[in-house]
Length: 413
Image 1 (cartoon, rainbow, N blue to C red):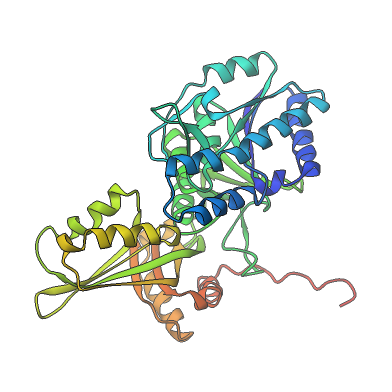
Image 2: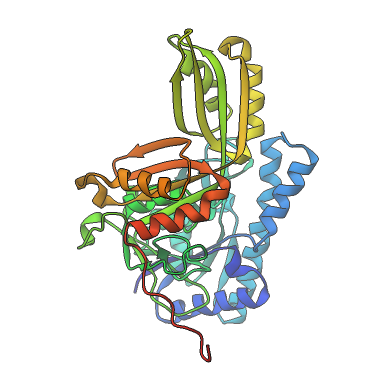
């Protein structure tokens, strides 16, 4: 008997038929003798609509009330899923975040999980119940509902798997595993049987949508084995595991992209000690995450400072920077939301030279200008114009030998 956490994303619970399908999958695991806890997202499109309503009322809305609104999507889904399980003869019972409880910090909209007491869930499973838990939400220090950021249901699932000491955390989605890149852009992308935690963490952090970044970070820390597989087909999935479980380490494992980027440039900032703290300190206090940073020194004692951030954070970042303009002392602020980040990731990059050079020459050959460059031990990222996203991904996927065989022609063609 195993203890399994099964997480189902929005497309997997998009309508009643799909919720019935989820219930049938869960019932199959229960009837095989396993203890099961289920984590679900809101029905596909629901969270986007709730977020849109908040933005239309007030672009700079109260984040605590935002959480109150957007957390409702999962409440609907857990109730429907529990009902569907009961029709399958399984004792399903819905659990909201505060009932577990999933305790978080007070950063509304981007809360971090601080503690989960798994005792009540373990007791419920031992008694034959299948807890159906609302993903994406928790309870803050003041007792108010908090949300964990987009994709936070993955984090909920991994955190619960760690808390109940699950043997595995299965993430069911609309794809059948983790691919070398987005198959919608590159039809010859290959499915990976296994990928290291570190590689998956980097891919998730630079735009791969399969798993949320913080969920992989927690899985690596708590050694939670993750399997990504399809809700709609009985096919083997992709395992996220320790690096030493991967026999052959390719030079580059995957190519990722993110269209959710914006670039900010502060022109003619005084070149003096402490200036970076005066720029990025207030942004951090406003929970604005900054990614790539480039500073260009001028000849007149000033510098241009360029950095990237999530496109959704651009209005808040602009407001913070304008409020702090007197203390920073910049001349002007330029914002460009029409950019994309393209990244290559692979643990094999540690021991090979010239990987980044191949990236730069490949993009140059396609006439794609690189605006910003960022590197780590197993990753290289570049910022390019948004219109070049698909061309860049295809070219790099081919350049690093990641293309699989072409799909066979359709019958009759």
